[in-house]
Image (cartoon, rainbow, N blue to C red; front, side, top):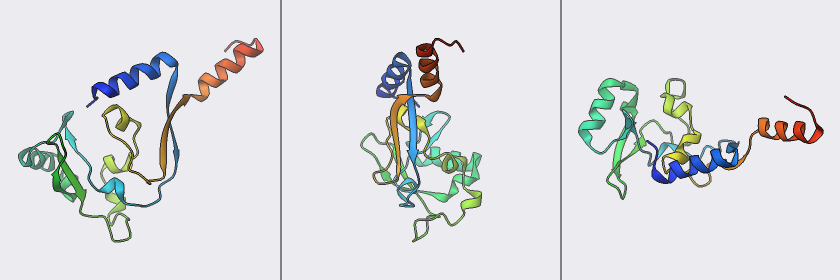
Length: 142
């Protein structure tokens, strides 16, 4: 679900012709498997009942355990399959949510990458934008 700050971030990127650029690599810190939030039907989970419905509809989410709430009352989860070495003990069967991490959409939802995870998201021009600028400068057309 996009936040108001995320909406402004998205609008600023569109107006400046920039995009979010993901760089770096996983440092296997395990932070992405701890203190995360889940959503169902574009709504962040706020109740145990909603989490049970999610697990009923998508059994692969059974790996997550409620560990508390954030300041907005949203449920916070840890993955029960994170090993002591910060590696997934069921890597080949992990949910799509895990496969897609880090997803650029995290910044449009008001989230952030865990400190020290090894990935960085920055704003910049896409390769295509750089190419268009170079062609325009050289007098060529796409």
